[in-house]
Amino acid sequence: MKEELVYLGVDIAKSCLDAAIGSEKRRFANDAVGHRALIKWIKEIEGLVQVICEPSGGYERALIRALVGAQIRVSLVPANRVRQFARAAGILAKTDRIDAKVLCIFAEAMQPGTISGSQLEQEHLRELESQRRHLTHLLVMEQNRGARVSDACVVRLNRSLINQIKKQIAQLDLLIKQHIEQSAELSAKAAKLTAITGVGARTAALLLAQMPELGRLNRREVAHWSESHRLIVTVERCAANVRSTVVVDRSATASIWLRLLLHATTRSCATFISDCELPANQPNLL
Image (cartoon, rainbow, N blue to C red; front, side, top):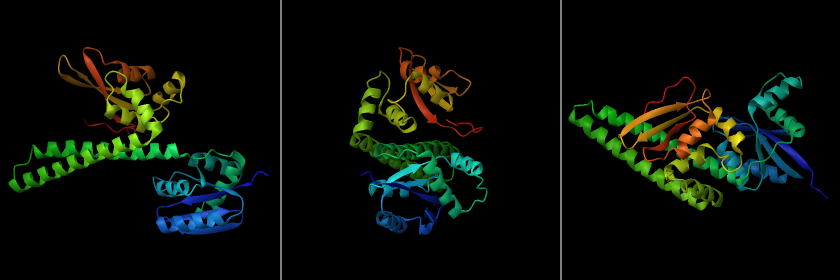
């Protein structure tokens, strides 16, 4: 006999989790202790439980890792879809506990898919890459600032900070390398990417972090994805030793940046991605 599937909605805040299933509602702390208490409660519920939650600015990541690690089904659904569903159902009030209940109703109607272990691996890689890009930008800022300071004490502090940033970038490079090698799926994709002339480990890692759909989409779907993301590509012309920047966004054909990234490694140039998913109306300072 097939086990009945029941949905448990969890509204996630910075410090607390509001969970609801049927008429029962509970609140847990959004920390390791609260996650363990929530998992214990879920395992006491009869039937197969699937947890439904929304993205919450990163506050959901630790909970999702804990749930998947406990082999509990979990779905992450877009908040705007849930809100539109609630309006259509005539649910206009909005509190944390009501939101948790709405998530249950939404899941029963829409039956969303669950998060897999490979998705968590990709998300972890994305976090590592995001931190590395942040440190790279910080390093450039400090190097530029160091060129303008003259006080001996400030110069020493600046150099010390630059050395610390470089050490952290090296540590992140090692963590990224180890993470890709430990994942069969990521390492297989990385091997295919680095087999392309001019695509090295750094470019492959950034592509895997920012475009998890690689290997699952056809050319048309890849084009649609790329046109919805603003990317910036740095092209280094080896012959002239000139570094130039090409901004590729929605106004450009998707194949342009893909060709730049993967196929522009001719005798005259090599291509690298320097940043991805830039916020709207915010310039990128290289």
